[in-house]
Amino acid sequence: MQKFKYSYEMYDHNLIYVRWLADVCGVDMMVENYKINYRTVATLFLISFTVVNLGYSCWFHYPNWHVIMELMMVFSFCLQGANKFYNAYIHRHFFILMYGRLRNLHYKYQHHRENNAQLLLLMQRIHLISKGIFVLFGLGACSYFIYPVFNYWRYRRLELLISVRLPGIDADSHYGYIITMAYQIFMMVAAVFGMAAADSAILLFVCSLAGFVDVFKNELRELDMMLVQNPRDESKIRRKVREICVQHFTVIEYESDLDERYFTTCFVQVVSTTIGLSGALFLAYIVRYIPGFALMLVLTAQLLEFCLLGTVLYVKNEEITEAIYGTSWHLMEKPQQRCFALMLHKSQNFVEMTVGGLAPLNMETFVAIMKSIYSYFTMLISFIK
Image (tube, rainbow, N blue to C red; front, side, top):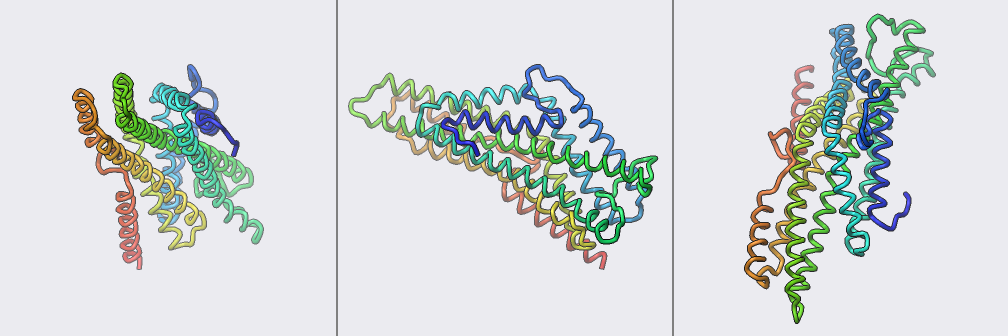
């Protein structure tokens, strides 16, 4: 990892990495006056064409439920991809606004030693996790190559990566196999880059809230030191209180924007990962489906990522409430105390990320989903036996 002195440099580095991933699929929404290009059209066509092919393949392989379950896992990724592509496009102006808002935060505190150090550390951690997400998706895609490569090396038998058939093309013929494999490899590459870009962008924007909160808490500590000084500079204290009130409003606005923009994304993410994880667990247990083991890891990590992001919001909101309450507000003048009372009231009614408004997106929800998947899985196995 490159070494940076200022947090805004690391933030830009993170954003360039996310934009590089997104640009492969033609969805770099940070481009000024973004226009649909040939890569965007190719990605849209690929998602739509894959959904059609999945329906055709289910009809072709029916009643082989093992293959249909495999195709359902592919459908769960298509569902994710379509939703994230749609949200990225319709909210593209919001993402540009978000970029400017976050960069101003980093640039404002570049010469504040403590704030810059905390923000820089946060950006470094986000970058490492983003790289891990890409590697994880890449390993999941590579797992599909194990079985075909092994069969060709051992038995000289050609096998497809996925049981997806193209209408009008005989995958059992030489040329049909080449065409089908080329399509499936292209689908894998687009899925890895597209999913990694979407999840890394969400990670960057949501976890940046921690930076806002850390800076806010540092401002409160500085205010505390001003309040106990002798003599006190009342005009300086009033300015600091105004700055803190504005920062608190910015945090609330930022949280509301996140919840509004990622409302449907979180719902689709949880539903799709639950479907895919159930299928991967079933196939790994019943037929020892090799990619199923890798996909269980990928999908569990995806679900865990989103639930952790929701937990980060919850924990940081709790920290805001505690920090406001722990400030020496009793040493302030009456108007300033009223401002802090209002902030404390608002901080106790904070915004949470939810699963489509049905349940909070946090670690408790993650545990409940995993328990439900396991219960469904054991019931299905008992029924089969």
